[in-house]
Length: 249
Image 1 (cartoon, rainbow, N blue to C red):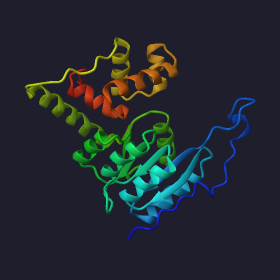
Image 2: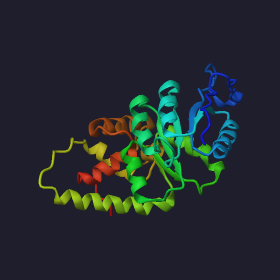
Image 3: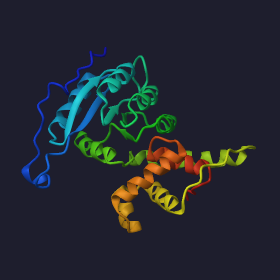
Image 4: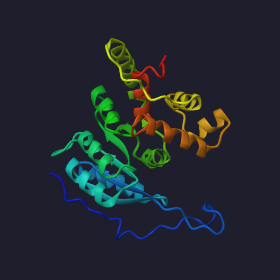
């Protein structure tokens, strides 16, 4: 039975960064605001305890099902949502789609026991930026939150081959379509960035690879998503394979 959602952001005391963490004359960066959604209260508490121990992360609320997730995301506007897939009243995938409408800037990570290919792909289509299995160590979750908040897409290694299989199936189905709507045209530089995103590189690694600034990479990724009318880096790669903009070997 799910518990009532508990929003903690208003009551939580602000955490102070160490004096050496920020440049002189600047205040500490705002913490990453996280919403936890899972129908198992004990699991939620474990995540909360780990995340609240981090100076740069603040748990602003928690809910027990997809319906609560959508309502709380709209009210609290979290930076990152950690959410299960199999939940009562409304699934995590259904909630993901609604959250992206209510809080477009929120990054959503599915944290689940489901290793089903269909769940993985549907989560990506719904706008999830990450798909992690609960087999990961709970101590790895803070770094996952930081990575997704920083613009990276995350997927459990054991699911990677299944995603590539789905890419191949999409590419094959696209060949069988009799009519295609012309895909938005990406610049040569945007295609270079997209290929590196497909290889799993983060913004910093892409910047080093192309000898450009990290901010320039962020701008290219944002332009790619806007042109393709997509929500996440992972979804952009799926779209690119489907439209033959990118080949996965």
